[in-house]
Image (cartoon, rainbow, N blue to C red; front, top):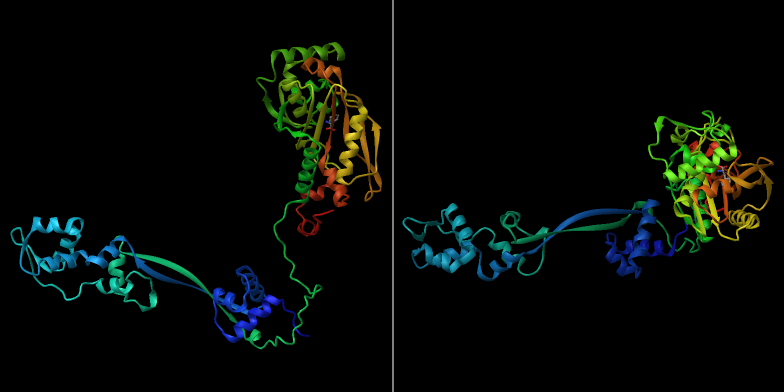
Length: 462
Ligand code: PHE
């Protein structure tokens, strides 16, 4: 079977057959391909073991500030020696004539025994015919010279001195064909791209399917005109339960349902007015002794509704569309549909004319956008909403209806004590449940199993 090559590969191979060692730049010239095409073509050929890339570095040199000055006037020490040609001179005269380079010129000349200075008079002693560095200086001249044709020792002398010589390291790539590439007969290879050819499987880094679902949900609510609010993962029982009109002896508050922070009590849970009015609402409507210490107990939030209610209490909006998204915790037995730690999406619409019908409409729209169409609404109970509904959606995989979002209109017992005067439509539910439907899973634990083969195969676009 003849191999199939891309046009780019063919051009590169042909050019390398004519001229066996080339840089990407010469290949560009000979093939008339763009730098990017050359780069890609070389990568392809390398992967197929058809091309070898040799990378090497070489230095080129040019003159720095002091080098250029020395090229024109001579090295400092040369200038000093020249001044002494016609006999001894005194130190201050030389200093005047040489200026800034006097010091280095004197130092070097003395060290090398080229001069002697018995009493303020400087004279020649053993002047050299050629000073180290002079040759390289004229070689480099004003142009650039490469490593190969340079006297190393001479170069080193000037490289050590400041600003005489500038070294630039240039990286080069040399491309050549492997033996198997040399025997390729290009006229036999077909020009078409074999779209069914096997490619190596590549496992690139990718986001987790659950994270994708979270991002998608966030995107949907933002597109629907909602803004995101965020709150703490640990909350006082006051905001997680009391402010939501959940009585202090409600079963949801028990240790087997809720994670408490062992012995941690919130100092300041709310404003005195909020505490007074919320507790009054409990006392009046549930008729029991409301205990502030119960409200101070810190919990891992059991739902995101605490974030919603706190936001509403702090802002008392007449109109709002907000959502929050994040982890919640329930002390429950883990099963195919329950985790102790999972994600919730929660939203509210506040508005003077907001109705239950609007609430159901928003749900339908959201489900449609996420790709869920088989849904129904079912009455249910939450301490903080009236009426209360839940959405049931059909999970084809499980072959049954599963509950998804809880929702309702906040009761006046919740809103009034906190100064919220307009109707609040609220809903919330588990994100993993939605992701299960999207990824056609029958066990929610799969999201946390780190099962690589599933993670790699889960399709990105549903
Ligand atoms: N907090 C409820 C839950 O966790 C959902 C809900 C939110 C219900 C808002 C009504 C209103 O299931």
